[in-house]
Image (cartoon, rainbow, N blue to C red; front, top):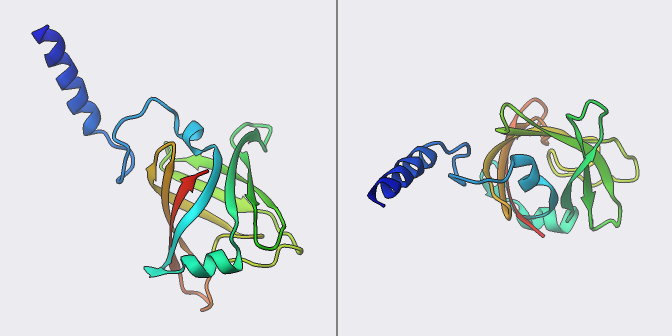
Length: 164
């Protein structure tokens, strides 16, 4: 019995020190892709550390849907949608996990009927997002993006999302 407790303690210590994402989780049996798949509501949007959540909700208001349906025949890219948007439109694109699941890339297709965007969120937008936290119910990301009002300046976008 003491041997089993010792082995479990050692395993726990090893896994607790091997966190992939800064904000967790420290251990999970689910793959990053399986945790990512689903519909996510944007709970908080910060642009250069300024809370822009209300602006996002009033202008765009979309939920982000990560699908497990393959977009690309090589299997690396999966379908992505902005759904339940204020304008009643759906915007499509694709996503993939990169660098041992530390980053998520997304690209939304150009759509002339979907005009409202904020930074890297919306039609004809893309971004490589660093994953800070990825649980089955919480997702925290950030990216630096040239999508701004000032030409040539990169801005930081932080997202906190909850799975619906």
